[in-house]
Image (cartoon, helix red, strand yellow):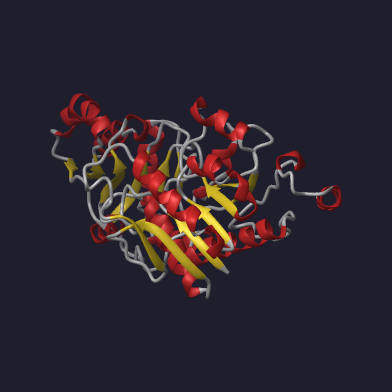
Length: 377
């Protein structure tokens, strides 16, 4: 199959530092190539891939200091449009713009939604362009959308097994990894560590929009012997950081679409202690790969219990549900269903839960296909 993967230009693929979407696109591209597909990756020049790389920007936009990515993204999409006939499937990982610019090619396109969908800003676009098939990364991510949104599949993220190597021993500190922002609740992580009497290492970047929050709310909390702020770390550092931790703290206060760091920790054998918001109940297997809590007190108790959790079982949960091979195979099923213009009949319960849109959102489906779809439901 000839597949185009269209990545964000904010970071390289894979990213040098922080960049969840770009990292997922990288793992997907490499696995699709390994499975024998012809893949073209549209990305920035520093990207490294076994796929054919179509360079759309000389440097990733964040490292270049470019805040507004609209112009560069539109220029990239024009190149994709020019080459559209070269591909069987065009798989977008940039939100919003493909709906408007590729709606007439929706029969061969899909958009994976990587961000939150509970804000009203983008809803008019999905209503105006119902033709474009969408992929969610968790079932929770879908909930705020209209019931007749054009969902093709839910496909959880997956990563390559060796990216975060299994560490059977772990360590004595708690880990917080990601962004310093109000919805990620690093203040909760600090309070948990202080009450549990364990060191906390915060490996996180501070975006420009969150500088004031960091300086006023978080920085004053760092002046404690148990708390260490490391800052942003790269891929190699992250693997060691997660593998050497006793547990990952994921005390989020927002509808997390997926939470890549949870499966990275699970890959290393490190259990996850998280608030059950958004995708968390779909990712964490309670008592096996982590614990879900609703209070600081419960989190402190879970920290103590994490010392006795079987890290081999945590890793096994990752291998069963969240590898790049499973993710890529689920996408191939979705691609084939898209090209066949029929509802997918695949059953991959650990990887995806399939849902086909209402017939009125796919104008190219005839009444006979609608009847067949109804018969399968």
